[in-house]
Each structure stands twice: as structure tokens, then as C-alpha cells.
Amino acid sequence: MLIALLRLVSLVALFAISLAGTALAQASKVESSARIDAVSYQPIPPGAALETQPESQSQMDEDAWHQVDADLSGRGYAIGPDGNLVVTVATQLVSRLNADQSVGDVNARKSDPKNSALFSTGGGTLLNPDAPINTTDRVFRVNLTVYDKSSGHYLWRGTVERADAAIDPATALREMLPALLDHFGETVEGVDVPLVQ
Image (cartoon, rainbow, N blue to C red; front, side, top):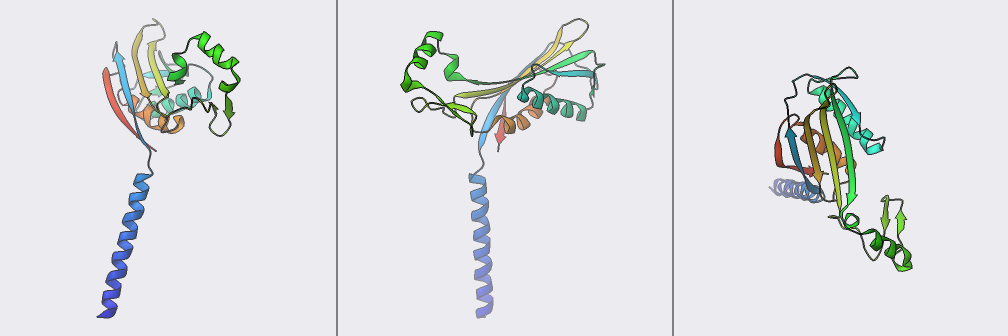
């Protein structure tokens, strides 16, 4: 009887420990969200031949471009240089604080030694102890456009935007792009996409 009771107590203890571990793992997940907006001007035929290209030679645009190629190919589209429809891929990572400053404000702050900024090699950002970057200061946006190569007319434009820095751009990109491509060729407004790291 005593042995059975000890076994029961040890099983309950193991179960409690596993529940605590699960709760800690869930609590450590970073959650965020993104928003999708897209406009369709003309239908994109299913399985159409598409030529894809990054808007710039930045690493983020290249990564997004390769992900778009793989995703669209998996959705049945023919990806290659012979497509009559062109898909452009652009990414933007901007700071809201800096976007609203005038040139005079920026130059005045740069001339004051107390406002000098240090570069963080770990975070890849400029650091300023007097104006730290908050998690809501950075916007990460991915824009896709589809146009007809022969006429130059747009068929579709789509944007997915994450408004905080809780999740790094590379991780957010892996979740944002497939969500945007779920609405490829459609008109949608304000679709929320949960992001979890």
C-alpha cells in the first residue's frame, strides 16, 4: 500500500513538473502581429508563368525573393524568366522616430556630443542612451507587386506590415510572406496575421 502511494505521489509530481515546463515554454514565446492590405486590379490566372525579381540587391530583399519563389512554385505557379507577369519583391525596415524629424533637428542633435550614437554590432543598430529604441519604434514592411510585362499595367499590389520589433525581421518574414501570398490576387484590407517566435 505504501509503495502504491509513493508511486502515485511521484507520478503526480512528474505531471506537475511537465505542466510547469509547458507553461514556461509558452510564456517565453514572443507574440506580435502584422497587417495585410492588398488590391487586385485584374485577375491573376491560376498557374500563370511568373518572373520574380527583388526590388533591390539588399540581403532582406534577396531573402524575401527566394521565399516568394519557393512559395509561389508550391502554389502551382510557373516561376522563370519567360513569364509575362512580373512579381517584384521589396522589404523596408524603418524607424518611426527618425521619419518625423526634420533635417535641421537631425543636424542639431548630431552636433551635440551628448546625443552621439554608438553602433551595436550585436543588435546591428545605433544606440543612444538619451533616446533608446522601443519595441514600437520600428516598422517592417514587405511589398509585392504584379504587373504585365508587355503593357506595364499592374494586376495586383499587396503589403504586409509588422509595427513592432518584438520579433526580428528574418523570423517575421518567414511568417508574413506566406500569409500575404494566401491573398495573392485578392483585394483585402486590414487582415491581421499573428506572429509567434
